[in-house]
Image (cartoon, rainbow, N blue to C red):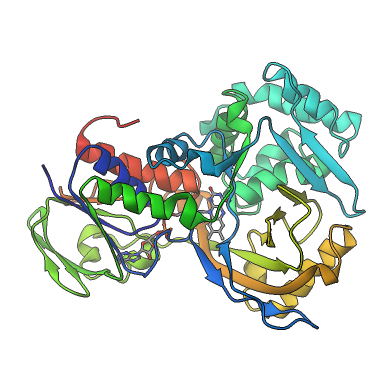
Length: 440
Ligand SMILES: Cc1cc2nc3c(=O)[nH]c(=O)nc-3n(C[C@H](O)[C@H](O)[C@H](O)COP(=O)(O)OP(=O)(O)OC[C@H]3O[C@@H](n4cnc5c(N)ncnc54)[C@H](O)[C@@H]3O)c2cc1C
C-alpha cells in the first residue's frame, strides 16, 4: 500500500488523512504547530477582566464561531466517519433570528410544510420585510433555478442583486448575512457566479440543505481529537510540532520531504494541505509554481468573546442587521460576537473593539455590561481569500507538475468559497485522486 504523508492539520489535511485511513492507506500527518485544526481550532484562552472584575478562569473557545449548513455534504460525511455527528446542533428547519437597530427581533423561520412551501410561508411571515419586499424576494427565489451562474462569472454580487432589485431591507435582512457570512466579503467584491452556485445548493436541493448547523462543542471535541484517534486507530500517525521546510525533486517526482527535524524519503505521495501564505515559506515551491505562487488578497474576521458571569440564558445565535456586528452566538459560559470582512479593525485596540460590541449588545437590549466578566478579541487577518474574479482565477487545481505531490486547502479550485466545506472537499478530492475512485 502506498505510504502517504499529509502536511497540514487543518480541515483539508485532516479530512484527506481520515478518508485515506478509511481506505487503509498508511498515513502520516505532519502539523507544524502544537495543535490541530488550522484556522478552525479551539483553545483555552485567558480573558481580559472587564472593569470591576478580577481574574477569570481560562475558557475554551473556538477561533471565530463557525456556521455550517445542511448542504455541506463533504463536511457532514467527514464528521460522520470520525463519529462526531451527534456533536452538531442541526436545526429542524431553517430559522434565523435577527435583531434590528431598534432592538426589534424578526425571525425568518421555515414552516412545517413540504419544502419549499414551508420556506415560502416563512418568508411571507418574516416581519423585517414589507409585503412588497417579500414579493420581490420570492420573485428572485423563483427565478433562481433558471439563472445560469456562468453568465455571472466575473460580475459582482451587487450587479446581480441590483438587477433583481434585491436591495435595501431585502439585502440587509436576507442577502448581506449570506454574502458576508459565507463569502466573508462585501457584495461589491464577491463574485456573482460563485454566489449563485452557492444559493442553488442552499435553496434548490431540499429542506435539509438550508438548515444551519453549529458545533455543540468546541472544535477540539468536535473534530480534531476524533480525527486524530481515527487516523491512529487505522494504523496512521499524527505528528504535531513538525513542519515541512523544503521539498526536493528529481525529474517529475518529489523525492525528499525536509522537515525542521529530518529528511523523509520513504513515502509515495505528499498531500500538501497548508495555506498559500505557508506555502510561500517552503523552499522548492518555485518548482511547483514555475509562474510564481498564487498571491491572494484576503479579508479578516474578528471574534469578540465575552465571558458570562452566570450560565447563559440564551441559546443558538442572533444575526445583526445594520450593525458593525454580524452574528452573536450564545454558549454556556461565554458569547462570541463575529465581525466578518473586518479589515477596518486590524489596527483598532482590542478594548475599543470590545466596547463597540458591548454597545451593540446593550443598545439592542440583549445584555447589560454587568453580564460580563471579561473579554478576548481575536483578529484573524488572513481568514479567507476574497472571492472576487481576480482571486478565483488564481486558484490552483490539486494536480502539480510532480506526479506524487497533490495540493489541498480551501484556496484550491473547489468551486466553493473558502469555507469549511471548501477545505474538506479539497481534502476528499486529494484522497479520491490517490485512491483513483470516488470515496463519497
Ligand atoms: C475566524 C474565522 C471564521 C470562519 N467562519 C467560517 C464559517 O462560519 N463557516 C465556514 O464554512 N468557514 C468559516 N471559516 C473558514 C474556514 O475556517 C477555513 O476555510 C478552513 O478552516 C480552512 O482549512 P484549511 O485546512 O484549508 O487551512 P488551514 O486551516 O489554514 O490549515 C492549514 C494547516 O497547515 C499547517 N501548516 C502550515 N505550514 C505548515 C508546514 N510547513 N508544515 C506542516 N503544517 C503546516 C497550519 O498550522 C494549519 O494547521 C472561518 C475562518 C476563520 C479564520
